[in-house]
Length: 199
Image 1 (cartoon, helix red, strand yellow):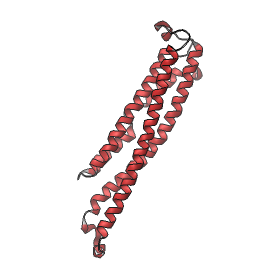
Image 2 (image 1 turned 30 degrees about the horizontal axis):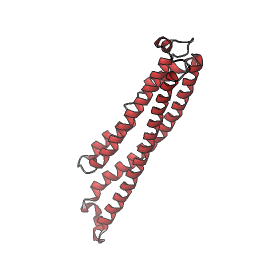
Image 3 (image 1 turned 180 degrees about the horizontal axis):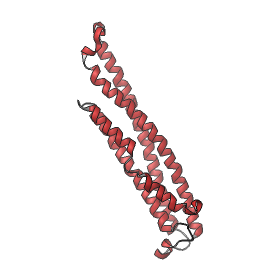
């Protein structure tokens, strides 16, 4: 049983690596979102010909500036979709770790009983703790990926509304907060799994 727990701890180390990758993607997505928001807010100003002052005498200036800004926005939106794909890759990787974890229990030389799943060796976690921890971490990240997808989809719609500024701030706050990944719960799971290394 102890050797099995060690195998699960290796899986949690893999999860930790994937979560590190997730944090890098999170920073990138927030940066992309901030850039897109700035352009969307600028677009509303650029549609007002009075904002061009003396430049109004330059033929086609308003259309050219708007076109350039829309082109930049399109490029950022494509980058955000690529970042979302990377998030999906992390989520899929975590789901695979969960499947592999379940297979460890089912595919061993002897299938673990319910009692064996709950059994602890010293301060080491039980197999049930390991399985539940992997499942929770995977679900949190999958739910957060779905939320991020919805927020990015909403971004294009928001750009067409007059109150875009407030909506953009609310959407950005959702991305920053990552409500589906409560930090205390994540730390709690890792504390249980690596209890003997902490003690």
